Amino acid sequence: MRELKYHEQKLLKQVDYVNWKKDQNIREVKILKRYHIQDREDYTKYQKLCNLITRLTDHLRKLPPNDKDRIKMTEMLLDKLSSMGVIPLKKSLEETERLAASAFCRRRLAVMLVKLKFCEDIKQAVMLVEQGHVRVGPDIISDPAVHVTRKVREFNEQADDFELQGN
Image (cartoon, rainbow, N blue to C red; front, side, top):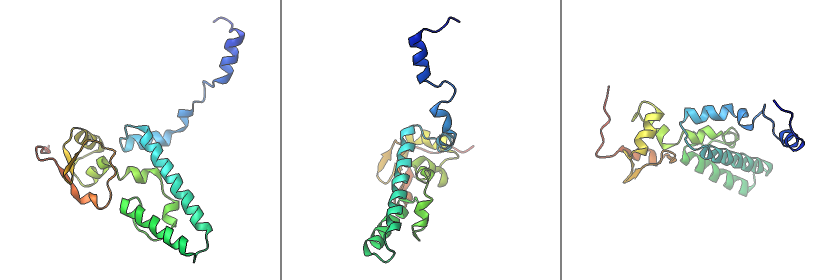
């Protein structure tokens, strides 16, 4: 190999070919594969939401416990998160401190179809949703990233022209 010129050496100093930023996200890749998330931006949005919620929780904890605004905001936050299905029970702010992005991933339409036993695995559920075989209420959904709230969960159905074939 030839010796590098001066400007080439300067450029190579700026780039680290051994440690890539994307190598540090093994956990993120596992979650993307587990929940069959096709767009990485969805997962980063979930992470940003979790960060905002935990920051809001920290600000609420700094207020005095008997403050009317703290009680009202805490109640509103817990109601919203429990109706979204992200937290199981609306007991206290402790549940929002431990909130992870995977809680939002568990409420995606494809994951809920597997949980409701419409499909065997998430990959099959994503395929069915993308092909338009799933209806939520009167609307046929073709985006597997749709968030399913607790109220909407009961309205998941198969489209009229589709039957799931057993083995």
